Length: 358
Image (tube, rainbow, N blue to C red; front, side):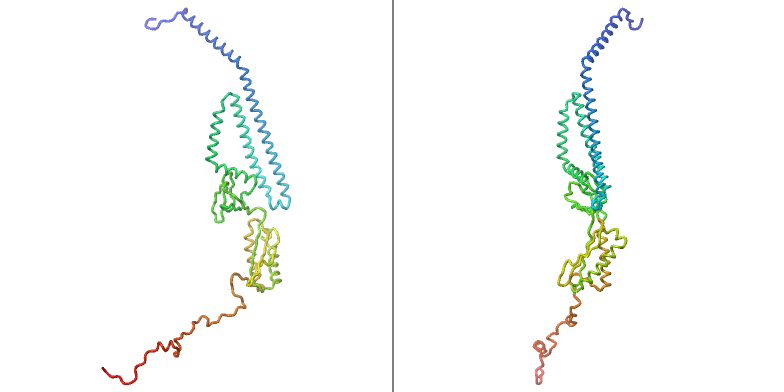
């Protein structure tokens, strides 16, 4: 073709086509031989990976079912205890059920993580991937995290055991040592408390060394009254017993009391006073209201019965009245004109006889 590249002749193209066909045939032959040589290895690796996945899934299912059965057994035991008298005081079955479900969820998650993580490492090993660098890096990272976050680990483990042992829950009033108040949130790392003045305390679980739960079981309301030692004891007991019986029958105190109001008797006897003590078993957290109401009623009953309540160092009625002249200062010696002091301070008299002018 004039002005362009020459067109190759068919005779020239035939050797090139033959060469391309031979290369393609050789590539196909090599691929087929490679597959024929390695298909058994691939099949073995695939079956091994499939077996690992099947075993991991079956083991995970068995563990989760076992944990679910354990949680159900815990709930059944909680329901059985709830029907007893002690269970009504010390065990909240619904709260125990909720906590057991939460613990079961955490345990199932941990079990799934361990089983699936181990299966993933076994799959990588089956694929001929060297796990030594990965495990070494994970070990170094674990050591570094362990040293850097040891307080976090301590808080987490303490929170797990607090939840498992059901030491306290939301709504309980506790004394945690570093702070006290009503529990408004329980976490694996931090417990949140509402103080008596409305403040919110964030307490790390690892810092809690001892816990006093004021909301489990029952509380005790105690009132101590000081009276004169000359009071008639039978009349005193009768008055207090009447207050106790009346108080236990009136609403809403009859629902807050979990037992009769008991007159314990004389708690202390001194020369100037004697102490009478009254006690009652109440609902958790209601002891302070019961004490205030008991003091109010005892004061009214004692006033009506003529029984005097005393406290501290107060004078008795038998003490003699103070001398009104005790507050008057003693007379001065200068008030007596015949006293030596008055004579010494008397003005010098003028000399007797005529006075001559100068």
